[in-house]
Image (cartoon, one colour):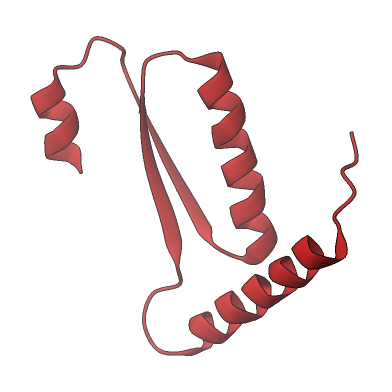
Length: 80
């Protein structure tokens, strides 16, 4: 399904792409978004998919780590 982007959102997206490209030209690591998810949550999985798409559009590396639903909180926090 196609989504129409209004002028404001399109300008913000273009600006973000330019900012990411500028940032990646400087020495260092490119920007990244890392996300841990615990268990199975279909609405959140849709949100994760949207994040992955948006990151890809603007050149941000997306890292998603999926953890079992029964992982102890201490182990989850230790991974961060």
